[in-house]
Length: 221
Image (cartoon, rainbow, N blue to C red; front, side):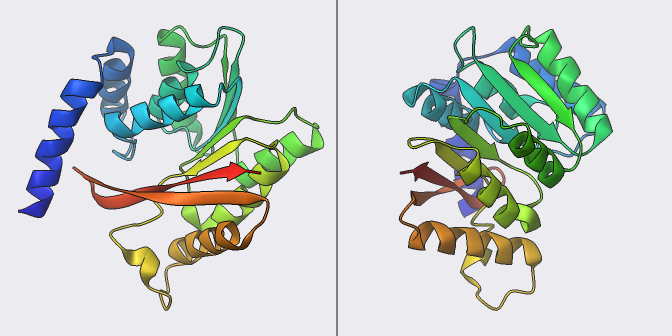
């Protein structure tokens, strides 16, 4: 019963707060036709990260986990015309779908899809001495979250925002004896944020069609 209420409430709020966007609608349709996993964020979550990026005046955004390009489009639409977003996708098929969807939305001039292992791609950005990013969105294989977090810190500046999706996982994050490597890695990131003088953060718990979860939102000091 609770989950049904969550879903209905999410649909209601999305209808009020998230304007219909043909690019995003097309992306969901194409992703379904290409048999991509139904793992993209919700419209409300897309609006959330879009607003966060706008609030900090993000000009450079880094995303880990492109899937079909849905969240990348939300973020890219928060950028100024001369802004840039790099999104990293390990699965080459997903990367092609994401790039096609981004191109169809007219955003290819500000979005680069990088294909490959995210840890390797982040190391490459560090080796390239990439300019700091203003906003990070991490929505990928959670067992590598510690590596992603540490790389984001190195690629950030004071005031940068780092967002991790799927940090609650129906409350599983509270299980300190979990055998799940993804949850353990997420717990470690939360511990690092909670104990660090360089980063301050909080978790926003969410409920909706996909159940009970949450996002970590952290600011680099």
